[in-house]
Image (cartoon, rainbow, N blue to C red; front, side):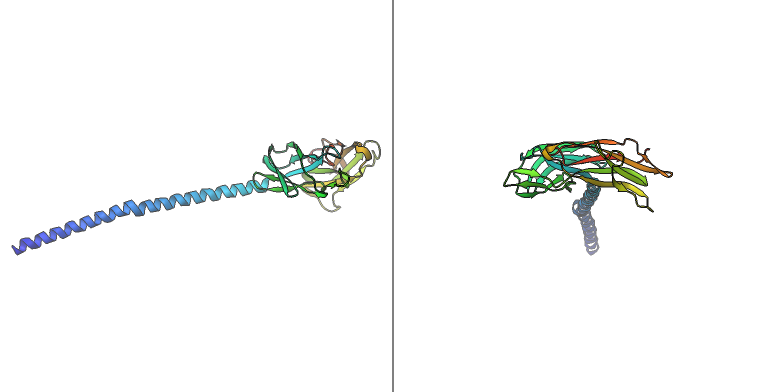
Length: 264
């Protein structure tokens, strides 16, 4: 009888061990493994979000626009904003800021394209009115032209100067940039830019030639010539001269000209 009782106790202990092992395995499958799966999923989501942030940061850094703001008339409180996308990505403009006030927009500007935003009715403050743009990617850009100035007492806009903003892309060599007037200085012109005597330009050239304003909003007619050095001579780059007309107010005080600097 004693031997039989010992055998039964040993059998029960064996069954208890098996049950304990099964319970442990059950707990492992129902708690620990799902926890590892959740942690793995969280790691994947984090990695994906990190990659998306890196791509977003790269796209944000690749945005590049030039813009300028101008009033419709010398007395109008309506302004327009001309945007030139000089980058490789399309840019969506979501806000136009004038000083501390913003005006919501939904304007998509394709790469190497130009869009005019407005007219936008604003409340100008006396003195300087600073215009900036905000993009959907979170970039903020300042105007390439000078600040708009409003004479509160007399109720009109004025600008210290007019100008031609010249951008030469795909640059490799030595260059000269000339600005000619249609009625005077046609042969000589104004030398707006020249490469250093011992250096070569690479990438992009950017300069602005300022011009004295004419009374009564008379139009200004100019042409821009970009020259690249070939041998001992400077040869006009293909596509130049570029005709330019400046009308202010009613147009931008500064006109942008983009020229490919490779071809001659």
